[in-house]
Length: 355
Image (cartoon, rainbow, N blue to C red; front, side, top):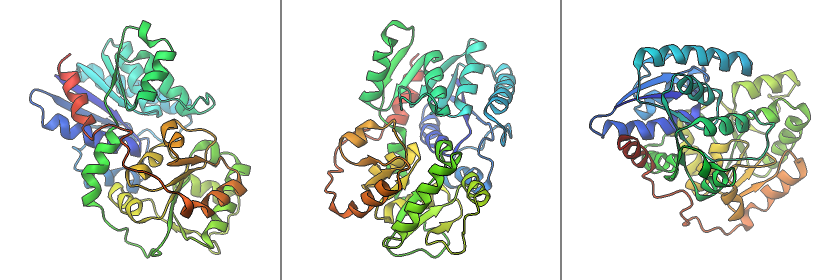
């Protein structure tokens, strides 16, 4: 059996590492990795393959720095060429990026079966490009591998019981990764405070809205006066802040360069709490038993909010500051198993192999 895996963004590299290990341990399964190039910064792309022992992609399409339409269109064209050449049994896509929908579309139009890892997630904000990507990918996939019961329920409510596909709850591959790589973490090669909050900001809904971006960073500046905020700065966010005239030199925030996954694991393991607008980091905070403040108006990971591990703050400066000030008052039970048993990667590969 041959699987073509399509990846292009940081969280997908981590998920692919988990499933690639399972494929390597499974007889009779061949994997061909296609990297669209969506994340092109060396620190945000190549380093993941080096650190995580992922097989180097057989194809690197080098498609990046474009608008949604141009990027997705070029990916669709180039992925189709790869699929015609490789003739796989399955195309495996992850998450909710432009790479995800392009890989699924290219496969479906060539009558190649599609498996979607992290299916069934919904933020219920159709203005988010990620929401559009995940909904459309789910609809054309043959197997939908869901990380949670909530994701399965979302698909059932949308009528997937009446669609010719298989919906399967497998647990979350990101938990597999957290368990596997926790002992391999490494400290970033930069001076860091002994006590700190870890922060990431990169979502378009925040970076493309000057008022939201300004409000978030005013909150982070204030929080940093009491608890230093360490922020690996995404290139797009840096560009948007620079365009606003942000005073980096006099900032209270500890900005560092983008980090690899093993360095991010170290930061997660050693931080006090997490502030983020990332979908993946919300879960990773939970995996490493850290409270999380999410600077978005909604989240796909509703079970984290329901159990109090994650709190939504939007871009409200005062609310972000208030939640950070109350972080010491939280008493959370991180022993709950919300995302499976840490074997999702092997469950996925075994399921595909039996089809």
